[in-house]
Image (cartoon, rainbow over all chains, first blue to last red; front, side):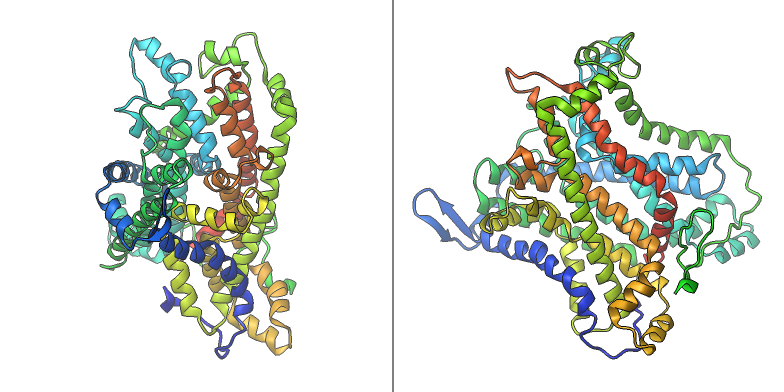
Length: 294
Length: 308
């Protein structure tokens, strides 16, 4: 990233800090300090008797064999490999459709599909939660009409139901990232493809997709981070599905309940760090794969 | 100064200069009904919950339970009653939450936009000691899941006596790595180095040059960053959830969830009609902002994606 920097002819000096300084000061307070504090916390343990003591990597050893943590991790991994591809695929198709210039009313579609992004996760989850409800709501209407007994908040469907909410919230956002990238593909590329007599599908696979490779990688990384951090939707749905959405449903929900219900701050910090490291490694691998083979 | 701003007459939107927009070069594309229909399905999926919300905001608590979800409750149109009840229920606590949200958004999102504009510009246009370190730290830290930071931030703020005050929500909102990225790419492209050189030759100070020359050129980028910061702070849930205990400091998102959970508590009255009307009121300002400012953020995003 740094190699693309274009810098004025001025000598290196401290002047830039006048602009960058304020951002970095707050950044240090709300990003760097908590990361450091988190690492510190994860190396200690507070016991009812004996107080707080240094325990080295004990908390990490505990996390490695913590069945609750790994089942939560497995759940968000499953979510990741199913929900993210579906969402990004739909987003890509819509972006390509809008960019193709073959739609009636493309401005409407661009805005309509993007709108859910502006809806808070709380409101999105409450709305879908009401619609999922088997007492009232759309699902109960459908069940009555076709004598079904679908329960979107039951054990086998609840993860898919959360996936639907997340997809609804972010399809438009990802579509816009792809569409913005498509808009700046140089016209000369299309002109030469035209001369070669390439069809629409060929133009997509040979020109458009390679051209927006960077946008695809960024959207994938954001979605991976989002999936591993899954918290808001299950946490807000929980009152409606107490039995299926447990307090250790996702790693984040688990860390949250550990600290705020169980006062186990040290172990919660450890769980958060382990999740952070896993996320960083996977995001890094995706970034490598996304940027090579140009 | 004014000569540097290209205005696209009709709306007055400032077009980012030096960005080569793809010419509307098209083969004689024929519009496709099939493709429109398929995209229409995704549009319907996107809009149905919003239509559901709009319809159900007109129902009473009883009507919600008894009528079909995607149509109005016969005879009873309770929208205005719901509206009044939403604003007056619990001594008008909804108004308080709305005010809190506005406070967090104005100071948080406004401050975040200012800081990331300054910093993005600084990174794009200055060569300074430690610049590489700044890039490395910010990019590295962004990969750390935000919620992983929540617990230690809470404990730190708790020791500093900041929890349960507006500062605990505002301070973390002031940092927007996405805004920084956007303003960095935007500054690199939209501000010609020669123009800055010329201003410096004339003896203008750095900040004067920034505000008089650069800010007008950064217009669409700033609006885009502001809108996205607005969404993040307006919709913030996790951070206020852990930081705030006192309902008087709740933003709308936490307040609505508290109303929703109230129904689950034994003995208290369910107010789903107020949750639904309150939800509608919560999303309207953001939907309006996005619809009204389309021209700005769409050009801003396109410019931001050049670098990707």
